[in-house]
Image 1 (cartoon, rainbow, N blue to C red):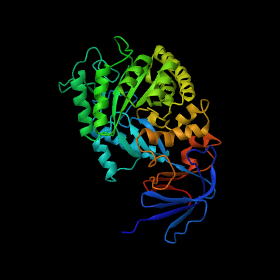
Image 2 (cartoon, helix red, strand yellow):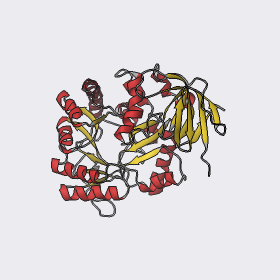
Image 3 (tube, rainbow, N blue to C red):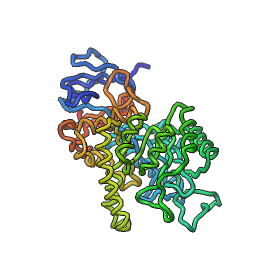
Length: 414
């Protein structure tokens, strides 16, 4: 069976390594990959031609920190029926794709069952790099039990969430990591410090998991040619993660500059997630967050801005993640661009959401780029995001075409 061919003509390209659009290119897609790009005409008589009309053609976006299985802002969702969680995930994925996210790294909650539905075409959505259940220690950042709860309704020791599993000690951590990898997890997610929205009712943690436990998870991931991503806010927690070989540092809002420099030394990625914190503040009244938590969120954002600046200074690769939980929160996904507009230039922010995230996901050259042999994950955008990042905030009107894996899911170009 002959591969389908689509020729994008007269396109201004977002190419990695350039801070300005590269004008008047042609891009030939063959099957699910980019076959060739050229400023000269491409001769392919059997290709369907799409005239981009001097609009922007750019790689599909990648969200490096998503949670698709939430039905509300609370991750404590074990009581929800499985079909309801699947429906919520289906809705999240479909809307993410229409917002231009052709790949997402799921940071706890999604599993093989949802990935299978995507692979079989029963639901539509981005490419899914799922973590399965995140690992958390007893009393850790993803142990959502109250002091009065010890087991779930079935009598199991449970974090009361589909996003995580409790594992203590090197052997349990190793076994838990192996189980998620056995079930197809693309990477391992673990919690290496407490959170800022749901702080412990006992003592807040400066770090979670010993270095030996962290190293066990890293070793198991490496055995499957993958890596560990760690939820970690505190300086002490980050340092432990780096020494253990964690590749992806999520949040990191309270890192010291010396620790940020250490990230560069160890080759780790920083994944800030500002919109999730801002969205929590914006909805604090309706979700009844206490003034003390709101104050903590505001302080966390301010500190994260400083960490972002240090990351730029020390050349730490900065990823693009959102960490949004629940269908209402997901509507703010593209607003992560807005959160970064005062922190960085448009080209760097776009690079975070494309080429840098692709490298983080171990997909360099395949995702987040317009190049021969890369997957055909492409957006046609009205306007120039490298000059005015605000065009990314209105995908409904500004994203004229969305292609994932060579398949067009939206086309307003005719």
